Image (cartoon, rainbow, N blue to C red):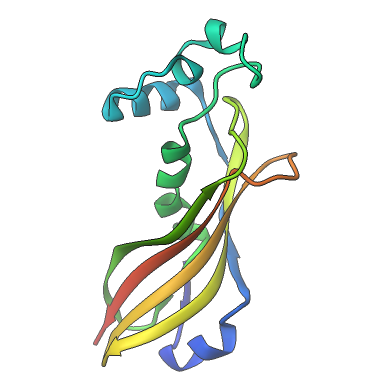
Length: 152
């Protein structure tokens, strides 16, 4: 994860700050996610039935793809120097734009959209995150993700 000084945040707003490694979406991961969330819709967990859909096979849950943002942030996000703790603060916007077919690779591309020092040493960062699908023009999703970081 990229480390920056708090005083540098303003200079990188609007810029791409990092890109994660690719992660392959395997059927086993989709099945495990279905078990955890109790969402066993056939388009995710039944490859034979999913072949008969316009997708041509099973697809990942949109929320599975979204949940990978935490992992993607390891390679694409940033931390403010002196960070003591960071927490997920939610989303301003999430749009699922294209299905992720099982077997495809995805990665996160992070842009710092804005930041606000709420109190001394308490920073609310807004990332624009695009989850790309390898070999496809349309991304899986775009999200404005909020993260709170505490320093000092």
